[in-house]
Length: 361
Image 1 (cartoon, rainbow, N blue to C red):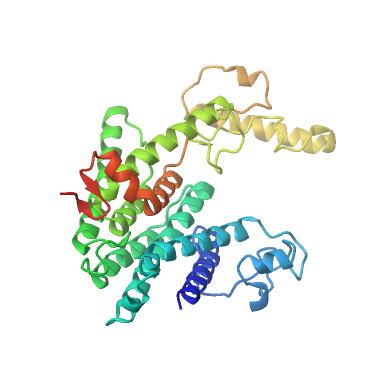
Image 2 (cartoon, helix red, strand yellow; image 1 turned 90 degrees about the horizontal axis):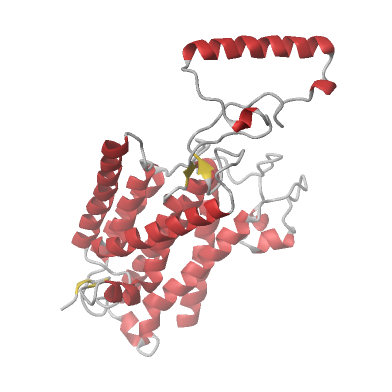
């Protein structure tokens, strides 16, 4: 029975990972996540059910669409595999303590309440991964994903009581802790954004981080917040330091990736995005130069004059502004770390004052 439970939980988590790939692709593109069914983004053909098996189908098809033979991103099987690992280790956390006392699970709905706890936690972890990837790729954290998961966290805490035999299971929190956690988590981000704006007159964090912290606090409880903020901040600082060390302050991709830039500069003449003059007819080249001169004159009239930079001497280099590292991926990473290691780290971090279940006596 326990083996069947482990296999079932692992497969369900992999399927949730497959669905999270749909969310990552469709939500930023303002598409329905329910219709149409899974299709190849290149040729538009429907993906057959036997080609939609998590991880396995990608391996069988060798990472290519069966119809058009275009490559399928490795992101899909990687996320599905990571989510399958989530399911396996969550099953160890939730059902592992009953391995030697499996008869307890047959008592008055204990097994089904534990399954509710598993599904609630698994949806939360898959949601953290999906929102982290979404923020990484698009700089957006969708509230239509984060807030329903926050509600699931509160409902899970209501269904699974904090009494024996559920009291000491990792991830089982009191519903009031879930509500307080969601409110405090979101409020702290609002305070940080407001304080930073008052000091610098700039927006230092995205509004989507608010919704993500509401979700994290509601699913993990207010006790998680010291660890989440500290771990996410430290890991973000390390990533930014690595980016600076690798010279990522100058880059041409200003919209995508972990190390993006806050200011998108105009493309200078002669950059790689423009057609080479030698490939254009003479008349077309003249028209383009006249249009560019006209546009430059209008822009100069509307905007204040800026100092000349070294990049103007080399038109292939684009000044891309200040380095910006999205915070969402690090919130998601810290939440996943806490879900599996919080019971060990939090008491050490707070000198025995806090645990995932509340104040320690």
